[in-house]
Image (cartoon, rainbow, N blue to C red; front, side, top):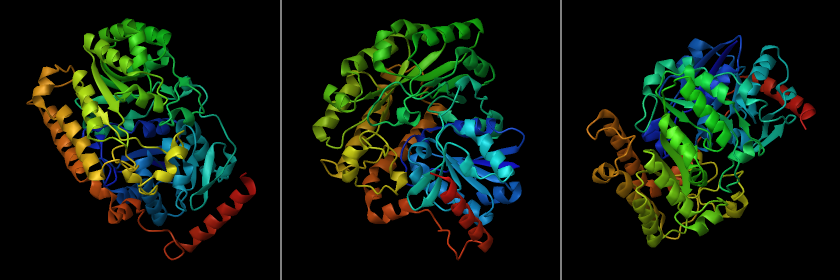
Length: 501
């Protein structure tokens, strides 16, 4: 059989890192690794064109795709296009949004929705399609049964043993390898060593996707993968990598023993860095160059409101410890919807006093499936179906000041922080190349594109643009669907009703 795995394009109104970073589709490379004995292709529609041509030439039996919340409508468009090309081609949707909010993908063009780890379940799906076994016999799936509603097969664990996962199929994206980068890190390879999170921040559903369970790979497994990666820069995308002291010490020892020379970008919490400066020092010696920290806010009451279990003092001290070890801080900040001018000034004061340069400023976004969703769901000002605006850059909640002023103050904070060459030079950033270099110019061009998007972001909230953001292209109806497919879909639905609880 032939399986085509597709990364959807970035929607029109989505603002953010797409202009300053573009990394490999690791989730699809992992899914591909879980398929044995079949022909597989990955199509990255962020960089590549020609879905129609690929369908005609490759003739897949199964098309799989995944996304975050911003890509929901793009995924539906892909599945509809696939069904228009061949109604008998099976469409499979996965990813974190599908796992937590499968209802978003309830569309007649979607055959099944994966609720857990795609790598662990994909072979069962492929085998079922190959031998015409009902998909609803496979645990851990959801199926569209009406608009905004899904039916479920039996439950299953998110995954079993992380060390049993095959290594991702990076060979399937090798033709695009030179185009993947993160800020100034190029070439860069993504790695994942842990699924799940130990903490319970109320604005995040990462810990809920795995039902609160943690699935971590052993240091030996991580070393095996590092040996196979050619890139010097490794971006470890675990939600928290610096977390388990004994595991980190063991992994550092194995990296040194095996003489692995890499540069690492990882995630950590501020309180861990402050509590374990010796680990930070050891990892700095083996190549740790940058650490992402969820700083989130400049006041303790804000942090408490997010159930962050951390303090501003920890944030400050962690940044200083990283600086002492020649490690750059990549900090995320979450301004609240009630911010006014003085709040934005206070946030920038925090940035300036702590010498931050790399920051990601994301307005508070209550995601469906998070603990704070019920608190805010009746206040949402952006349609839940306008998925491209749920990008953690647009405000989906009513703001205290006008939306236009809110975005302009956000933009002003970004500009004073990142678009100041004098400030960048003063901070002596370790991961920044020379000012007059291709990589720096690329970042500036990307930053200018983000600037333009934020400058007009308030216009994205206009009704005509919301309609565009909600669009899923052509609807699959009796008029445009082959009759044979209508009969098939009816039969599948009848089977689902009889078999799925």
